[in-house]
Length: 194
Image 1 (cartoon, rainbow, N blue to C red):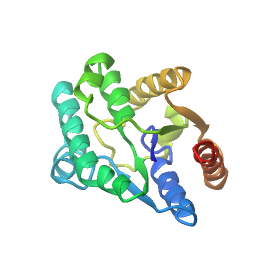
Image 2: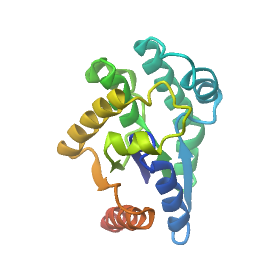
Image 3: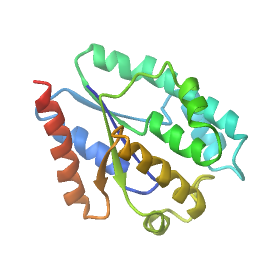
Image 4: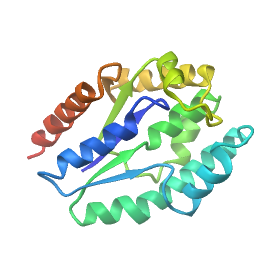
């Protein structure tokens, strides 16, 4: 199974993805992974771009993330799935749709660019208000961590929740309560496939 955890910057998705992987390791061969990946393109995105002065061309940004996603899927996700692992990804294709879509790119075009990306079996959205995440973020913010951007990104994520492509979890609760809810949603999903 391939599960992705999505959400705004600072919503707690990294913490929740890691907690979920740790919890699932008790009963499954679960692995944690993330985007941008630890591959060459993902490393370039993190080191040379995310904390730069300004955003790149949005088309270039979308292409970089799509290229990193293919490298991530081919080098990490598929090999782990082939070994029988349950893969939990901290961010995936919905991040591109939400962030580059919020910047004005067509969602249809972003989906075409990501057409070769593996579809997740389950995608979870940890929902917190943009105002909450702005208070949680470090003083040095990435080029995408502005209140206006986060508001637009959340709108797109919520449309995917309405379309049932993402399962929404209230991220405004305590870390432990959110972890229990994430685990409950994932466990119910996994039990349905047994």
